[in-house]
Image (cartoon, rainbow, N blue to C red; front, side, top):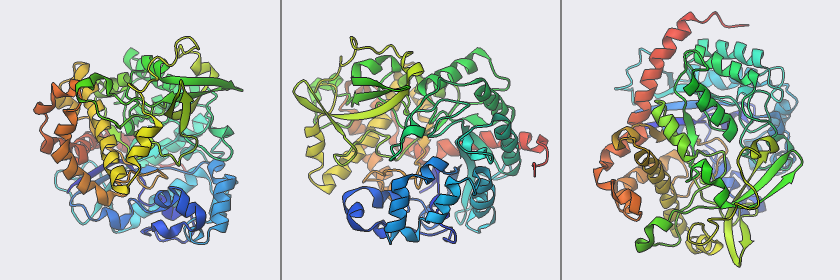
Length: 532
């Protein structure tokens, strides 16, 4: 099997303790005690895409995410306590390394340049691609890589909590002169001076991760323009909904010189257009400068009353995911979307997750929760009089649905396959429903797993080693799955599943990268020598 991944972290976990081999394979048994038995932490910590796991494929092409851990995450009390007291985990996560990041003694961009990048430049298993690399015939003995930058804070040495646009732009030029950098996320998990973010992490101290801004700032637009000047794409993952809206509109209006395709390297889908958010809001409450929102989880079984099946797979409504109109904008913009392998992002909530239920009108619903800044929430048109329109058992999943599929591990594994197929079905349906030819839609999606990026993997895809099995399952069962829904029954027979599987898992990404390498090579040749 050939494999492409738009967003993956093969060596990130090996850098969490000094002296750990770059090709270490962390076992699930690396977390001991009660926390290892009663949480998903063993699966989160275990290696999902280390060097050995990636060598199983025939041709491999990866978008390696260059990401420097935020100092606020590194300083999290619970994370440090677990790393200090859990004897097995302390072999792989060092308190000293966490403290270096927390105190900015290991500076963000220095970490990228001096800790993360050298493995890909020097270790024999890797080969960094360029314009002259023949991507149609990759060496099966090499793991071929290009790079995507996760969060502009990763370019900041002065501070990775205060975003300095001139420093970001200077180090962006330095990095792009050194390696093929295809894209950048302007923001990640924390508050930013250049771009508001979508809420996406829960720690013991959430204050730094609750959005407080309002879209793209003037400094943010300067960073975007600097990326476009270097033929680097903007990756909208982690940007707030309002910031994404602004970016799409600005690109359409010609605000930027030399605009590049807008992409999303590791996405999930909300299942709805943003105009329908209010229908699924169960409750909202202002908390300081932010608004907490609780959603029901849409399941899309309503159009399929003649084949109604419960429990049904569902979506994550949180605004870190793409809304329908954004799928259309990326595809029409000539971009590419990578499908995440994080079960939370792609719609599955566990009964062991934090506070996953809400009681409404005599029913207990599965829910997702997030925060918006007050300034952005006011632009969504949500108020007490227009919420809960589709919070009912015909549109949203119940606690009983989750408990039914969780009775046996085999049932849960099968349900996770349904979750992934619903994401793919929805993507294709949105494209077809908006006048995009099915063949074009098929060519604009790939895998962007986020493996080894501290994610909750699906039971059916715990590591990259499970993806070949899922690929075969998709070819065998996806057409029947599409038949459950009235809208997709209209086009399912036009889908060549063998071709689609090859596109999804390899060809689409390879072809997109080939185009981008040509654009990047011309730019890199004209960039000034790296800044010392």
